[in-house]
Image 1 (cartoon, one colour):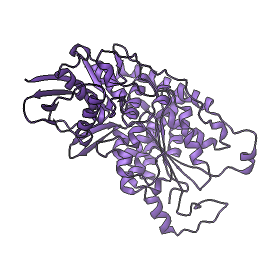
Image 2: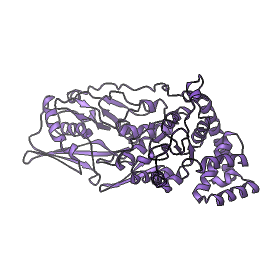
Image 3: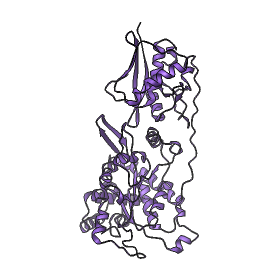
Length: 496
């Protein structure tokens, strides 16, 4: 007697769930249980979990030859989420449960030895996969709930035994909690120039490098940047939540509209920062998608690790290639870096004497690398606030005022781009600035004086365009160029 049945499962590939047909064959031959189709070690171990779960729930494990094929065979599969579809496929093939209970469904879940079904990482990706394939979803109830989606039926199975009579529970959907209270710039005493620079960065999604002595407030300024960014749009929210779901991170704050703030330690490896491992997992630059990637003590990172983020800064994506293939992760983030000016940290500080030689200072600042420095839009110096400012009652400009300026600038920029689309599709930064001839000559003279690269000139114009948007000016003027040059050119403690 031979029997065969196919049920849908899925495997995570990058940040997407790819549908996989789980084909179960039960036939005559030496009793065996094999899984083929490029499974990883976790899927191979499913044989023991499935055997134990089927017997613990009162079903019969067939004493014939059992072959499970995961199609397509050329795709490497990973994860314990195949336990449930394999077990259900065997039970349907041996006519122990009715096939109509799981027909047209995508099944995902890990089995315990007692037959309980557990949720796996990446449930949001599996939901999207089932919706896109026009299937319903059969899975365990995640602790934090499922994300409600239109045109997607979700059925919850707590134990393999409940499938005998088709007893499925209704899923508990997670609500979108209100945005939590984040730190406010009113807590930061002084630093009005740095707050202005970060407001410009937030308005135009520019990268920022802050250089200054220890205790000057660089980390406080960076950690409050998400408080002035607008909430995530619907498209950004789905993309960002998807990355965090696949990585096994909490997606609650993302669903509430909060932008992520990632702060990897300077000992982070290449795989930890850009992604890697087996199976391939998104790195910190992907987890910062839609938000801020803060590299504190950036000079302490390994130079090879730092240079790996140069390409994602401009393209917004990272392609991680390994022996099993190449996977593309999103990497649309705002880069904020902070560094001391020298190994002792006090070069340029009037209150403390620097003990480093000129060669040590150059080598320390050179660890960041010229190519990466050229890709960071805004360079600012951050000095210590005076005791009067720190102990004073007022902290200066707060996040609400800065956030309002960011929102107005982004609205003006969107309207400006909409009007420009009719006149010139794909308008470049240079054309969007609309420089007058005398302002263009001024920029050329400054570029020649400071030996600015072509990328540096374009980034200066991009900053100037953002500053003009904040002032609701359709054309970039001399005052906007001057402020942009002040934020771009390194002429302070980081200019050695």
